[in-house]
Length: 357
Image 1: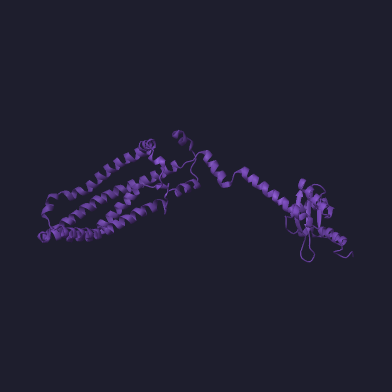
Image 2 (image 1 turned 30 degrees about the vertical axis):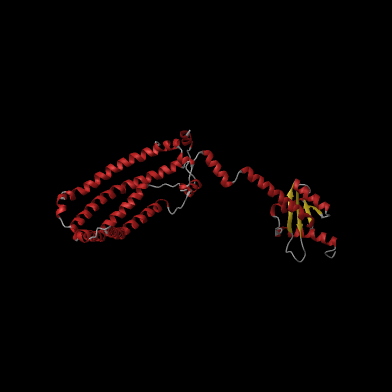
């Protein structure tokens, strides 16, 4: 079933799919990049901070080498000496560990930016399922990670030892050398080992980062149905949108019908078009359209106008022209001023709003 699901996921993940996954902490990340960053920081520490660290460790060591007989052996003094020694070592190594923490965070930020999500640590029953645990253990991804670990171990060991071997030729002479020289030799040996490891990890981290990116995109692929469903969610279900448009149209028509009784005149086709106009002398620059419609809606406008004794004027060319050129609650276009003014002027004179001559 899982193979069938994977086979049906032929579509590239959408931005929404990737963003939803990111919100849940599901992003492409390479542990090799993090390891590489930490090793690089370790190499920088050895090169720039090792003299300071070696000097500090040497001073701590001399406490026990120069006068070991001066160290009291009772429990209380041993506890104090141990605590002081560990504190001094902690202060010496603190810059190294702080740098490692910063580099580990920077490696993740560099891969997928700033991200905080608790989704990955939420308890889920599927994570403690024995069956799913076996599937994850023997999955293709686990197999690839296992083989990658073996190859990495072999390559890193070979290269690192190759870089360090020239420094091990006189290893047997180290016990005869003074402690500061011994620490210098250990520093050089450590730098050689870490340099070889960093060189190999640079290549492995780059390749693994590309692999993890491609694997993540493959895992996030979608079926055609998932793409359609997501499109519906974003754009809206066509049936729901149609119902919303219908409700809006009904409310719109209801508001128009309520405005018709306030019209000064309704110009009709006589049956196919109806436009209700309102004009208040001295307050409006031009008549405005407060309702318009065709066919069934035109008949409704005409019927409401008759019920409320609103004058109805049949002028097919003007009715069609106004319907095509004027929107609701808008003034009529200037090219129709003369024709409409004659009609409204006649009606106002009949009502007594204007003198007859």
